[in-house]
Image 1 (cartoon, rainbow, N blue to C red):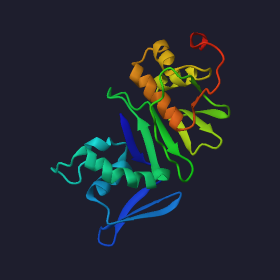
Image 2: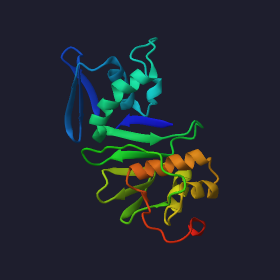
Image 3: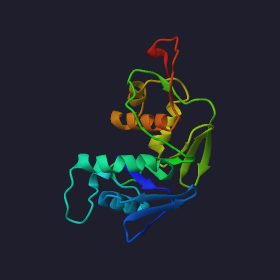
Image 4: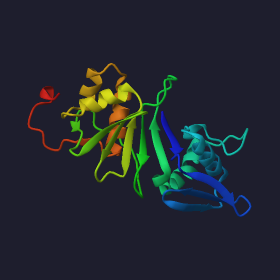
Amino acid sequence: MNLWSLSEDVAVATEAGGQTLVLTGRWGTERIGDAHPVVHEALRRMQLGPVLLANLEPRPGSIVPRAHTYLVLLPVLKRLSHLVVRTLGLDDLKGPLLSVFPVARPAPFTPVRLPPKRPVRMPRGVSFTLEAAGFALESVGSPHRVLLHRPEAAWVVGMLAWPITPDQASAALPLPGAVTQDIIEYLAAAGMAVPVEDFGGGLDDIA
């Protein structure tokens, strides 16, 4: 599940009779005038914790097509990328796998589908810090830091110490292939995994 929330230091308020949304945080103040009700509801919920955009409704009992929700929300969330935390979760009640936090402005984050047979690896310069909530990954020049909440995410990170394809990582780990692929793609979008441009060996020799 792809979940969205606001950074913990972000506060959401309204002004101009409720027509303008005001977000304040470490990067200053952002104002969104004449915001659509879906935007109001999304940011209200995102202030409380991670949400699934597909579940959002502009008001109780209303029905808004999912495509319309995305069309309204995504441009706003792109503008607010420096305030938005992206979280990868599973529907298993054990908590999220990992979260990607903005540490710069802007902080665009767009996971893209990686070729399953193209080797990737962790780039040089990624640092690890053990925190109360899990392992944190940071890299010089990346506008994001990644927090690994669960061992499953750490298993995937460990595979990226050497060039490996997403298919090979999926085969080597006791996780559904789609979950391994999603973790790698989140790491790649955050700059913590990169394609191996020139690899001289056969793929069977990787890992």
